Image (cartoon, rainbow, N blue to C red; front, side):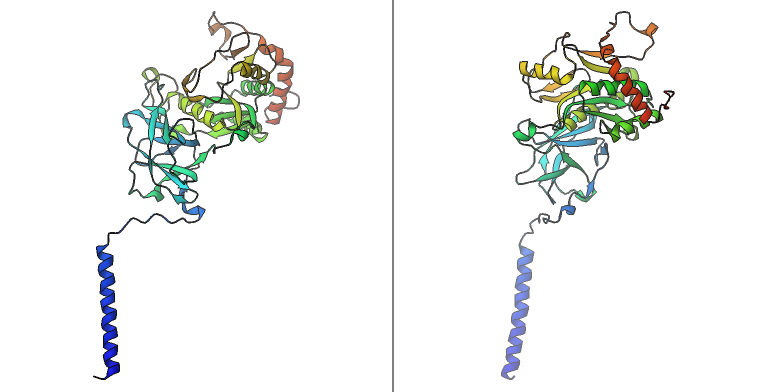
Length: 386
């Protein structure tokens, strides 16, 4: 064998031996899980929910919205949800961190104590954001790993953390959250009178969760939405559950109290938290009326000086707060009252009801505004006929 041929055989042998050595190392070395690459912003989240009610995969629960809330020690995120109370399970939060996935963190489930016996209840899910994660979206998992996350629906995180200076500036002084509209409610005159009274008192935004308003009311609400007073949130709870027409399960039946009234009120508080100085929770036939002032701002400026109190509500029921961080204060009736304006015929009302004429002090300003809005909504002709 000549020398060149001998060298060629040696090289081939060394090449094969090297391949065998590399193969043995790759087989014997345990494989580590490779974290997802830091891709472009569209790599995660994969499916962003654009609905107000989002079913939670592999559970009987539903997610509504996710908000930054760092008032409770150890938590960063509060997810407003609807949970079936007899099916609570261990859950984990997974975040999209500006385009890449985080590690999961354990979730704490807090079912609201006011559920009136219904199977489903307003629920908060609390999460902590992992270190070094610039979180933009969140989803919940039923196990900490091994889940195909591309099938998950993600909620965008609202109410980003703000500085103290930014907190001093609000888009609105007052926001009113209206209980869920359902049953083809169509009283346009009552609605216009209430909204115009709110506007005179200084309310800058009214949030309405609409399940099924009547056709004329939808036209009026569209007019108010176009000018910025009303914010409409579609609320198709009937597509997911059998909502109750009443407040007590033993009497009315169904899955959830009053079309999810407590869920929408709690969502509205967090939705409005960073943009509104004060949030009022009302039915459409209720008005919070000042008696020593002509508007709510003057009244609250006085009360704020006497009782400086930051935004301390954590969970609310219909007529009272369930969880708070400070003390509550009952405003004296000579300063402010909740005026109830029912549409029940006079002969059917309780004899003990008090007739309050405070609203009449504003009638000369309210009525022209009501007429104008009904006309703009196409509900009143130029000669004043409906």
